[in-house]
Length: 380
Image (cartoon, rainbow, N blue to C red; front, side, top):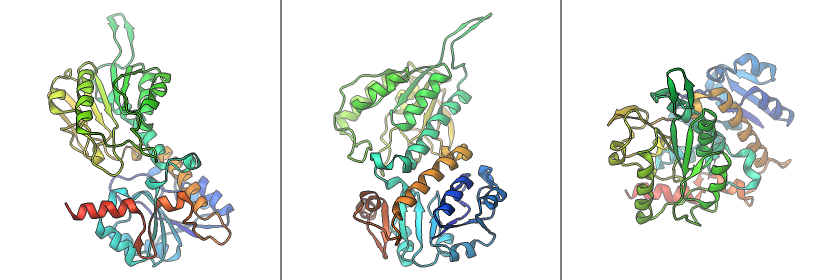
């Protein structure tokens, strides 16, 4: 098959969908790889590296789109990219930020078969394809470094001639992949760390990283069958906010990671809770792209209110473009090899991974979740 990697045009995006090492693997599998000139520049994978891996460098983006069978991307296509796609192309990349009727109208007009990386089910067979976890790990790491940048004190315990400086206290809300990486990074920097999560299974993981787990009445079915957190009742959320509010006042850094797949992030930190925090404290809101876990988060901005810095960070994985590109490249390559694993290169829609991740095919939306999301959007 002919695989194309265009340059990402989404503002601020520095990653590239395929790195040279994976180009070699795809070519060894019998495919041809075409990459737009400069596509890897922002992640420090220059054209010469792709040429050495035997990729074809294409200067004309329109020519690239007209030559290929499969597009590998990170950010969803923009309208100008749709206009260059030939009918029947296959798209593989992230899609959840573009779940609108207009977007899928453009997809279906050109009979694009699309696969969303974030819809790959979280089962044992997909660990090597799990781009969400790869990118969440980077976000958790970067969140702690950002907190250290804005916090007006040291992270580790220091014994100095001027006296003893106690370690920073860090609270991580949500112990998924991002949260666990944040815990591990904060511990490596010498902070005292505690974590909160509604899922009973994560207590052991939190404690194994050297953090204290904040106890509350745990919910046995807090996860969906695909491994994502469930939406809780308002009564439960009220109790959860009370516990978190008590802990935020005692910590210098709060990192929130709680997200509901495909929905607005739950509000876990109210403005009243922010007012009670120590001046100079920092909140890193990793759910900012879904509206934020903090009531006063402004997505894409760092603000200071009531003496507390609130960082509404967006697209954190792009701030570490070398490793983020390498990890994503491995994920998408393994996913592609699974999709087209047979000699005839036919898609097997009886396979759970293929069926769950496919969004559009033969001019129609075939993903039940996307159909419901679009209907809900039309009714609001």
